[in-house]
Length: 515
View 1 (cartoon, rainbow, N blue to C red):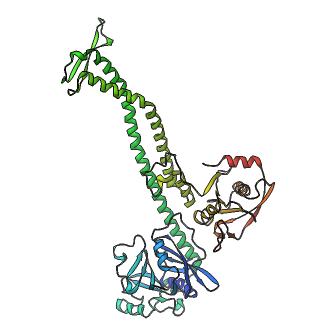
View 2: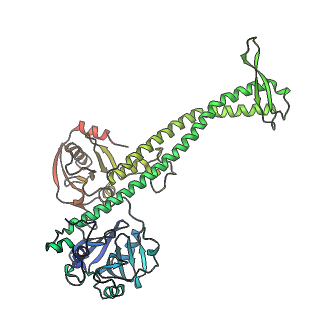
View 3: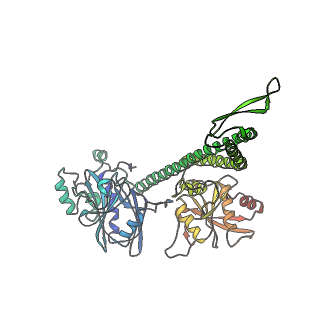
């Protein structure tokens, strides 16, 4: 199997050659799962196809399926969509710029020709007339910002002359022009040295290469989201530690307030003999007697700007304030300590979250404190959590089960939150909720599957019936037809479960809802 991390020029050319069937197609939609990966939905009469452009590997090829949508995409996705949606794909080329391979997809738009560039190890760029950069994905660097001119020097593998390479690019045959002759026979293409020596062609599975490339990019995106969530939760925990320290100081002041009251009671009987401006006063303390039964003298530090009565009044006021707040301080300390323990637990779980579904669940638990608003908001205190598009239950086996709240929420759960291999369930032929078993693996747990099917039957128009049929399949086999109503999808490769209503099992599931 070809290692997708070390593709030769010939292999990249062969992948690019698969796009020839889409020349003349209209770009309907595009997605940016990351700054290095772009997914194009192209349509020719009677056919709709997907193509993947990967800047990390500098490849473009047909895609067997659309990558799972992440919970968030780069903000620049909307700008690229506006620039290319409706454009016509005219051609594709493999080139060398600054000794790095790149893929160039050529489009015709109402604003003139555009070229989508994916250079190895870089990011995605969109070029306009004269090679001017009109759009750049995040992380493009100083030399690749919009408004700059993209380098024109192109070298073919068989020459070290940049000018000769540039002339080849203008002629449309740099490295491999997918619009020209067979991609495998593109002039100047480079094969695998080992296969050339043995005379045997290395096994080449383009679908597997694309899947690996997309999987690696999705894994990088997952790791980036995991780091981002962990950093926000760490910042939240650090802020809570500072808050807890301040509350502890208030608690210490409240404990000292009893001493302020006692000082005031000692000072007040002797205020008449203490002149303003005195810095300290010695007064007897009849609560402490010496061996002869005489009171011990206590030295009180005074504010010379205040009279003795005013010093006593200030101590009494401070004592009453802290004594009145003692209950609130204790409650606040418990609240902050619980919030801190919860934030630390969420942070630890975020660092080991296995997939995007688990991260999304954690994000819902954390609330806006871990969202775009940053750690400055007070969501972890639990006063108001954001509305999630699903209800969360826990199977008897411990597996999480997500149930869409409504038609539009069903779309969000299935099309945006679910991952490709998550198990998806729905009451067969009926109106009802979309139900998801995230991270079920290759062999779903039978008990979790049965619990999810029971919930799918309960949250459908067959609620209360003795029996129901529930279809289940993988999320990647579920799609939404164009123009379909909210919640309406079609699916394939499904299996059917016949569910019998078990009131005790259903009651236990509903009781296990995670609020």
